[in-house]
Image (cartoon, rainbow, N blue to C red; front, side, top):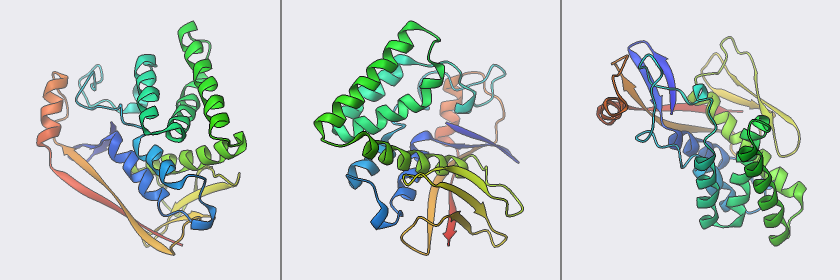
Length: 241
């Protein structure tokens, strides 16, 4: 889960909600520049965090505060394998993009263990196999994944409250065209992306957040119960060219 410090405690955004926001951003992309297999690509974006289950496992720091996903250092190979396997039920295109996302997130840890290296090699083999079966060039697959990564990153910037103050630009990522994209919040609170990649001149996007006033928790079950009872607010950003 995504955990932000709040004036009265914690703001929590579930990973699946973040993924839905990423898909919402993707859906606004300029029609003529959309990658191949558009609907399947949107499906991959909206489901790329399906295994992040805030009601299972440990979601507390050592001192009992809610654990933000960026503080989790251990690579759970079985969890990643399950994500890759489950993606296949949505088709090879979705499975390929999610496998590429897994590779992007974990390739930097190659060499930590033989099991991890074998898993990463397995993902590369799957990606090449699916590209061959789908009769697409690696460049087209890379372009589709760059699009997915950019939407994912922009969603995270919003959810983690990382928009800089003072109308300063922040790099999102390189897009499917290889060009760098930046995001900035204007003085009027509108958010803009440069270069502008969207079909409409302006549009809103939204995500739900939970609010906890309790700062520390004795157990994960106590945190889970608190999240289920927590008030929910709809966060909204207005994008404008």
